[in-house]
Length: 100
Image (cartoon, rainbow, N blue to C red; front, side):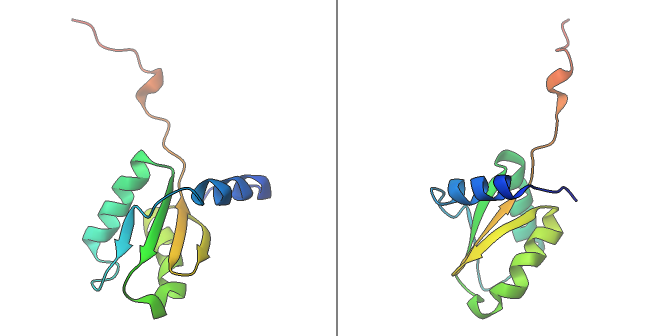
């Protein structure tokens, strides 16, 4: 797991204020399809806001599970919204393009 400084966490909280929820946890909960969709979203965006539209009474238990199952970090949980962060992987940006 990666560690974050308090300054980074404050920055992510500030950035999250302007985000709209990318995904909503519905009545099916943390299904494999939902986890796959969240994982895919985290590949494209480091910071994701997830809304608990159903299962609101279980959000305290489910938010940390989301982070664990996706390898992300729970930045905050406010009301029915959780904010997750996962740094984007260092991809093949350094690899040269193949030329035929």
